[in-house]
Length: 618
Image (cartoon, rainbow, N blue to C red; front, side, top):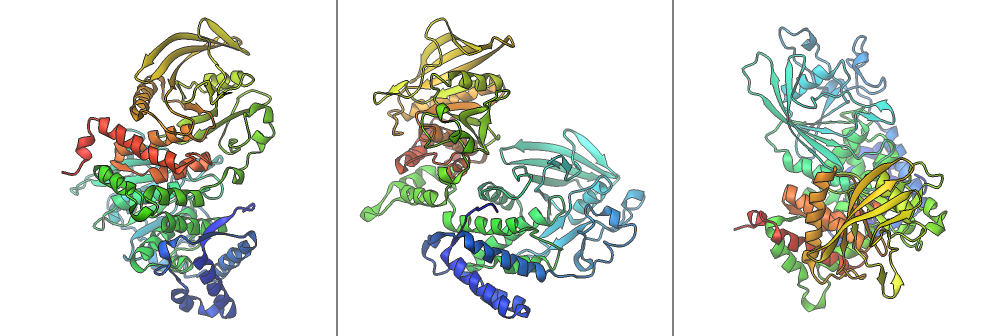
């Protein structure tokens, strides 16, 4: 795990050590011990007693996971391993148990719908039997079987946890049309809607069996696209938001939820475990992750396949316990905001409470690898908030490819923003190369050239005429004042390639270095102008810069992302937006005062939004 530190509550560590000691003393007690070794959270006040598990405790996780591996069940799987059927398994070592496999019914008149086998298993939920179907990603020769299963079991929710291709390896055959209708055997699948977001995509399908009088089946696919090619996500935030979306959509009256990745055991087992444990937490106020996984493995082999996945589940449950539900319906926003502001008897208010949790759970800049930035000190104003190596922007074609800039995801797209250091004289050329090569349509400048008597930003454009920075010329075409900010239209031209690119700079002039803003309406005006330009210029990454890369820049990106989600879903969750932002830009939104201003800015935007009244409860 490369020295990664895992957060967990103190009580969890104590109870799992107890669990482990019992297992080591008498391994045959495994199933009997599980209920008594649950982590009881009923008396953990606010569940806030969090601490890092030291690196030496990693041995504990390894031993417990190894014990679970030893007691992996081995039920009969004669059908899945029989001659002629084995070829229908994506992996030779992963098939179904006989006792709970999905048995397909044949369809008369269709030769490709006669066999009864598919590599898919019914899986019990916490409250409901056969709540899920765990299956492998379809192969070209099993895609008809996949839709036959969906149709037969009336499965109206599909959860996909792999991309079609990862690390140059095919993980799943594409089983849906990009547009219009595709036929898979006797099934006509029509895509009726699609919404692409930064971390996941939802697709709506209408499925019809040819020559059948039965009505079409409406199916929604939730496709999580942010799982890395190797390992697990660094943080559980995005997967938990995805899970919440699936849970909100799926109704009890619907058929089983079909869940698949590639093999249908690793990521599939991880998400199903999280779902079961969260229901257990809600119902009993206890957590028994090991017990849930052991039970899942009686229904499908190798569920939760790796130690990484096992620890990730703990991280996810910790996040839910610690963070709570911070989502607000837009219609309740004004009332909630008023409640957040109240602090009777001088107790911390909700802003303080949420920000304190963020500070505990967010990675610090020093916890993120910054080797490239540290090796290029001349390109940094200071080394306090260097870009993490994983997310940094690379200058294409340069021998030294470093620039103090980092990609940040938005609500609807990955790499929606580039948070950059304000240029120095020595880095202005690099800044323009980044803008030119990435075809950025908007630069949002949130600082002045000089603040508190010190240079904050080198003037990287010319007031009149043309300025040159290395192989780039920069021509100011227009400058005008617009509702509290300056709008500059600029053409940047690469002399070597004779390639010109136009960009608009939106320069906000009334946002103080400490994050306070004399007129929040200005922020909303900048966002509206930026949105209009993005629609016309291709939606490339928006460059945002201020004095320190974390204060005003972090706030701006958080406000935009929060508003985008509210306009789409009708909910506001500033806490989760900032938490996700800090994964890619540790330190973003520096103070509780800045955090509080995010809520105020979102309110100003919503009140100016024509359809906000539709959200408000009458």
